[in-house]
Length: 446
Ligand code: SUG
Image (cartoon, rainbow, N blue to C red; front, side, top):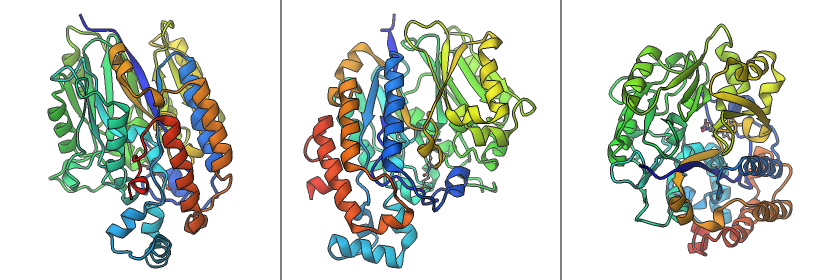
């Protein structure tokens, strides 16, 4: 008999440098919004409001701190020397694209922080986490080290949690974390099936229009090191990647027994169904909820981000709740489809809409902002309580944001040396608020 468990969410707090620098080719929103002015404070508040809503639904909620940006340490590593102001000035003059990459607030998309195998599914009964190396883009590849530290602080108990190193920083093992991972089970605490979706094979040339970010070799390595008991590997639909689904969570989402996905999500859907059914045999009967191209074309899927919803089981409700991006309401096709879902009499009983527009403008919907971690009560109790989202923490973080975050930031403003100071002051204060210790960030250790 397994201990009961709940699906907790750890959300990435939006950092003070949140901006629209157009850093992610293949991510259509990021490309379309390149150069626009952002509002870091509004982005922070939107993320907090989402956490508050999920906490209100009864799901344990944690906060993952933003990373130190601009990452002067990363610019030093590639040869920019001098004091910090000089490093920034030289980098912006000689390599503006790399300077912008070193300023990105991309750690907010916590679905890319790590892949997580719950204790009910791992080889040794502990929760296993592999931080993603995010090799596909220079701004994201900077995240792995700080993410590892962050997860070690959130889950300090080595008896219950294993925080692995990221996979080798090598294109064969390109890994984007839980954005390509779905776990299905009868109940959260019961043994489940892990679906690991990959875009390309390391030893085959990639010929798609946009980069395929996750390799099959990375997915297999993660399942091996986690001792995953029931892994299913599936190829992401090539058409989906070509259409702008740079992660599988843009075209599919699942929890409990339900996999809700667009027709384009997998290269071979029948095979995925067969493999999942076989892996789930004796445990549960999977429910596949497919939306066809005819019902909703891929272009509308990408523009609305309908599948980048959170699909959650609030305690006390008998069916699942789909927490969808507000943009879904603004397009007739996606809106009608979402509204009709409860009427299908399937596992989804209710749809809610949530406004995370600032993140959405960079291609990050509600599901991108959170890392799901299925935890038993004992595991929950072992997590760093300072990072647990409460009404008091919400109020404190809003006050902090009012004082420390700008309301207008253009990509050009990222050059402002004052922004480095502002960010550090904000993050230094935050480490105290979340109980992260006084040596959490590189600048605190310098
Ligand atoms: O990696 N956007 C992120 C969005 C990540 C979304 N995550 C999931 N689907 N799980 C990315 O493409 C854009 C940043 C910029 O352009 O400045 C960016 O990195």
